[in-house]
Length: 252
Image (cartoon, rainbow, N blue to C red; front, side, top):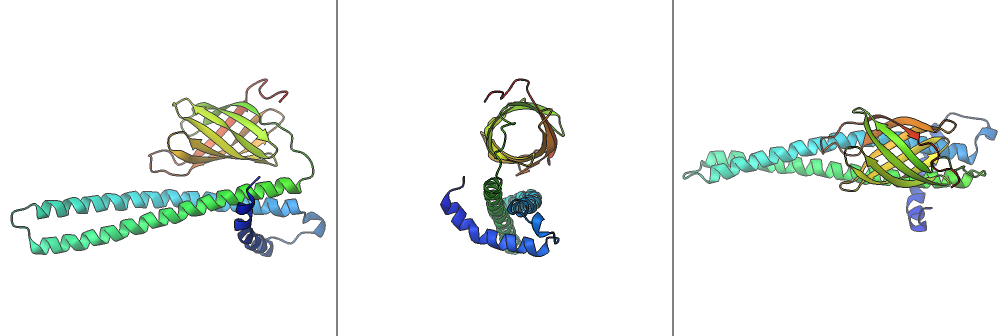
């Protein structure tokens, strides 16, 4: 459950969000307008916004890296010019103008990346709160179908590994270990046969979001994943699938 301080801080934003969503949502019979259905649509809306912002952040980080590289290049040119015996005043003036422009461009790119990171963090918190509100609106208990070890395969390079999940109602937590040596923790939610899992790498932190549909009857899930940052030279996301290992989680 989220802390009350978090709920109070996000409550006004949710009031606006739900009001706006209700204004654009297609009309439906009153009997279909349950609290859970409204929250489900709001959750889906927030997920779509999060996917778009993750894509925007990846582009912004690439622009930031390019701007930083240009700043380093101009700074080197300035250094080389001033080390000459008789530096050219015209060349120095031109380089100073270029340096000032590169500094401004790099600062603007860094600020855009920062704003997007803050927005992504707020959106993840909003999804967590919506998940909790959905759980409160749902009268029936959620069966524990995810606790246990899952063998995973992650595209586009068919990277193998394992997720060790623990389910507590609609909340998920756990750990992961991949065949390339990476490991860390997991957190997320399970709503209406769909999982949303955040991967927190033990070295670099929150680095990816996994979404999937869970087939409870055969113990499988499949969906798509998206990195939170492409600066490390990784891929741009793709599909993924997992199968629950036989006998895992039974009796828990």
